[in-house]
Image (cartoon, rainbow, N blue to C red; front, top):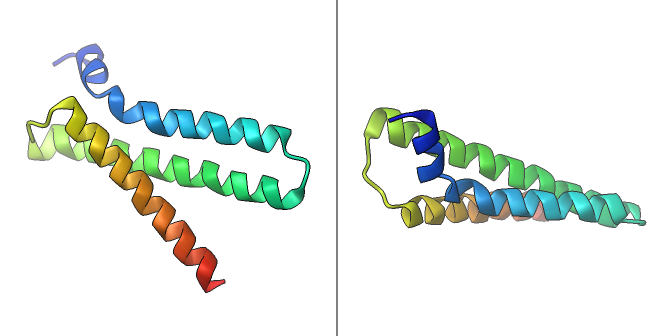
Length: 96
């Protein structure tokens, strides 16, 4: 499968994290208080982490495991990785 076909098939995994990252960057850019800027910069890092995890999942899925998932399966995995990242962030915030 060519790269273009692969990217088109798995594009849905990148949409939600990209929207969250763009929204977070806009909020950080327009924030006036340090606390708000810090909180939304954490959202940016969580989004990047989730995007990286989703990318790792796709690489493992495509090259090693050869799982035959539909586009919505990869989308749900991406959402699950985002929620997992948010849970880790909230747990770290409660520990501090």
